[in-house]
Image 1: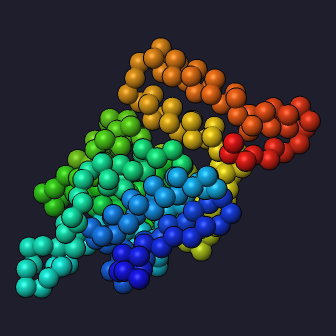
Image 2: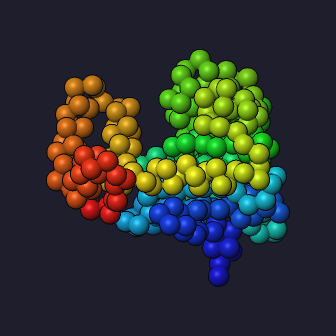
Image 3: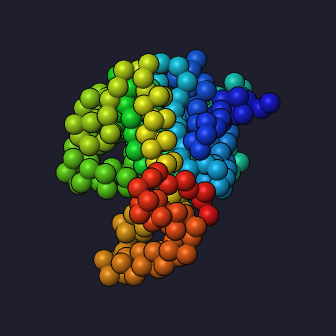
Length: 266
C-alpha cells in the first residue's frame, strides 16, 4: 500500500463515503501525492451511484489539515518539498476545485486547525461542522503569501465582500464558535461528537432523492455565474429530466400516501 493510500483513507457507511486525511503525526499536512489521491477519491465517490454524500475529516485531535507538507522530498534537495512534488499539479484537479465541481455534497468535519491549504479544503466543502478544537486560520498575508487554491474565490461568495476582506486582510483565526457566528459553519460540537454529527447531517442529505440533490448542487453552482433568466431556463430543463425518474414518481407517491419515500437513485 502506498504512502498516499495510507495517508488518505476511504470507507463507506451506508450511502455515505468518509474520506480521512491520515497523517496526524504532522498535523495532516498534505503532500502532492495526497492531493492527487484525495481528488481521485472524491471523483470515485461522485461516480458511485450508492454514495449520496461525502464526509471529509482529519485523523487525530490537533489539526484537520495544517497546510501543505513542506518537508523536503529529498534531504539532499531541500528546494523540492512533498507539497510541490506532484507530477500532475493542475489547478482543475486540486481537491477544492473538485469538491465544488462534483455533484455529490461534501460535508467537512473540522477537527483542530485548518490553515493554509487546509483552509482551502474546508471552504471547498458544501457544509462545515466544527469540533470544539476546530479553528480556521486566514493568516496567509502575514507570511507574505496569498491563498493558492480557491480561498479568494470562495470566501466572498460564502460571506460577502466585506467580511471576506476583513478575514483575509487582517489575518484572523476563528474558533469553532466564531465560525458559526460568521456563517462559515453549520454548528460547533464537542470533539468527541464531531464525526457522528457530520455523519448524521450526511445521512439526512442521503435520505433525499439523490438525483435531485445532485441537480440542486449543480444548479446552485451554475447560478453563481449566470443571469436569473438563463438560470431559470437551466433549472426548468433539470426539472423536466427529474420528472421522468423513478425517484420523482416515488417521492410524489410517498407524499400522497403519507409515508417515507424509498429512493433508488433511478
